[in-house]
Length: 121
Image 1 (cartoon, rainbow, N blue to C red):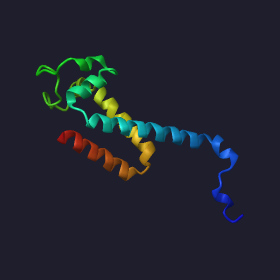
Image 2 (tube, rainbow, N blue to C red; image 1 turned 60 degrees about the horizontal axis):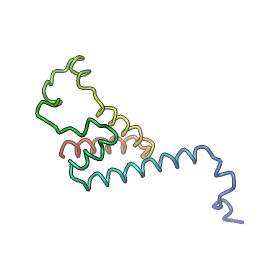
Image 3 (cartoon, rainbow, N blue to C red; image 1 turned 180 degrees about the vertical axis):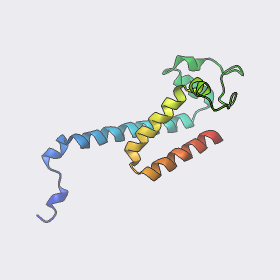
Image 4 (cartoon, rainbow, N blue to C red; image 1 turned 180 degrees about the horizontal axis):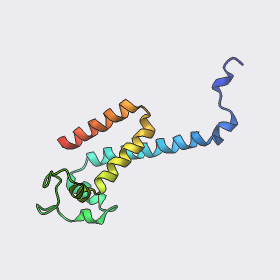
């Protein structure tokens, strides 16, 4: 009777927040497994795998493709010209990481380390 609080009750399964966090944990686990799989492939094969999601990745990269360091002026036109899917991916990564980490300083440190790793590769 002293350890009764450790035993789950039948109503714990119907707790909506518990289901929500299990779904978030499941998506985070699937995402991390996908990242590990992608890190173990060559960039060419990784692009061909990602081409299932975006067919534009099947074409080869050339020097004519847009780079972010062509124009470094701080203007609204230049800012909106450089907005693309990478910003949406980084925002989504930060948003989903905030569900998993739930600590302001640790979350921002993790995002900063992610950017350093991305720039170093």
